[in-house]
Amino acid sequence: MRAKRLTGSMAGVLVLALTAAGCGLSGGSGGGGATAGGCKVDRGNVGSGKLTGDVKGQITFQTTNLKKDFGSFFNGVIKDFEKAHPGATVKWIDDPGDNTFTTRTVADAQACTLPDVINLNSETATALTKAGYLLNLGVKDPDVAKPFVPAFWKSSTMTDASGATVHTVLPWYTGGIVLTYNTDLLKKAGVDTSKSPSSVFGLFADYEKVAKAAKGAYYATMANPVWRIPADWDQMNIKALSADGRSAVFANDPRTVQWVAWMAKLYKEGAMPKDSLSSSNDPSTLYSQGKVAYGSTNPSFVRFVKQNSPSVYAKTGVGQQPFDALGHTTGAPQYISVAATSDHAPVALAFAEFLTDAENQTAWCKDPNVVVFPTTTASLDDPFFQKVSGDDPFSEARRLVAEQLKTATAYQTNLSPAVQNAIVAQVQLAMQGKKSPVQAVKDAQAKANELLKQAG
Image 1 (spheres, rainbow, N blue to C red):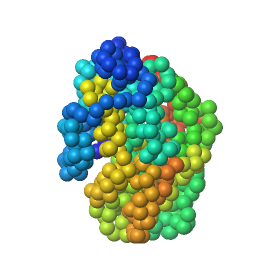
Image 2: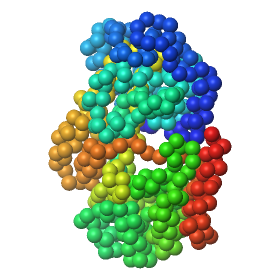
Image 3: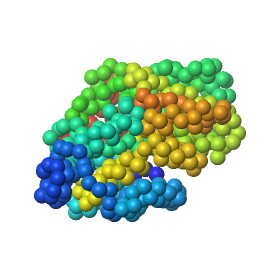
Image 4: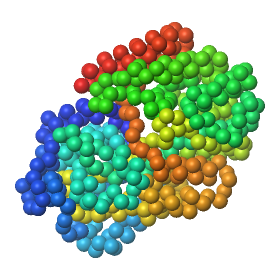
C-alpha cells in the first residue's frame, strides 16, 4: 500500500536534478504564459490568487498499489465524483510502488506529464515541491485545511525553492503507534500491565525485568537498533539533525549517550536475542511463537497475530507507546497532491478534496480489509473509532490510535539509509562492548556528518 520511501539524501539529489532541468514557479492568476517546474501551464495554476474555473475535463488519478485490493472502493469514489460533476471524468492508474517509483515520478515531472492527482510520500513530495511541480493548495483554496486534524495539517508542510513554507499536500491516510505485548510473559516478569510506561527509559526498565525473569527462555524485544533509530529519538525529542538537515546534532544531547548505554546494558543482560543484533527481522515471527514479550508498534501487527497465532493473540495486550518528552505521537501519512502542470487543475483540485474529505476517509478506514486511519477531525470523531464496542486487542488499538491522531503531527526525522546505517553500526559496536556509549555516539555523529556533507 505504500510507495518505497525516498531517503532524505536521495530527495536532495532529486531536487538538484530537477533544478538543473529548470524549476520554480512564474506567473499569476488567469490565462496562459506561466511555468511550473519548467513546464508551460495556465497562469491560474501558479502565483497568488484562488484557483477558479469550471470543474470540467478529464484528469488522471494515480495511487500506489491500491487497485488490486481496493478497486471497488475507489471506482465508487470516482463514480460519485463524476456524478456530482457531469463534465468531469477521472482516469485511475495505479503505480506498483516498486523501487523505481521515485525515478519514474521524477521522469514524469521533468517531461511535464505528472498525473493530475497523485498519491505521494513525504520525501517525494518534498523534492517535487522544491522544484515547483505541485500546486500550492493552501493558496489555491484558502479553505482546504478545514477538514483535517489541525496538528496534522500544520505539520504537513513543504518548502519551496525560495525557502517559504507551503501546503502542496493533503494528508490522506496514516498508521499509528501502539505498545503490543504478551500479557502472560510480562506477568511472569513482574511488569505491571495496568498502565503503560510514560518514557522510553521506563519501557527499557520493563525490558530489563523481562531479561532477569526469563533468563533466556524468552526475550523482551529485538536487538537491531535500526528499528529504533530515529523513532525513539524523535519520541524523546532528541534532535537528530540540524534545522536545515545538513548536519547531525544528536550527540549534543546527553540523553543520546544514556539511550545507547541502556541498549548496551539490555543486550548484555539478555533482553534481546543475541543473533538479532544485525538481523533485519522484526518481532513478528518470534512474538507469534511466544518467544518475545513485546511486538511491533504498528496497529496492523495485531491483526497479523490474530491471523497467524490465535493462541498468542488471546494473550496480547495493547497499550500506549510512551509519549516521552515529545508529548504526542508522530505519523507518516500518505499524501494526495495536485500537479501544478495539470491542464484541468480545477477538476484535479476538486477531486483531491473530494477523495480526502471526511466522508470518503471514514468509509475507506471502515473497510475490514484495510488497517489505516483517517486524518480528518470528523472521521476520528466517528463512533467507529470513538465508541468501539469490543474489548479485543484490535478494537483497543483502533481506539488508542484514533485518540492519538487528534494531536499527532507528521513531523518525523528522515535519515537516508546510508546515514541511518552509519549510526546503527556504531550503536551495535557499543552494544557488543567494543566501544563505550560516549565514543559510539561521538563516532556516529562524525560519520553521519561525513555522509551528509557528501550529499550536499
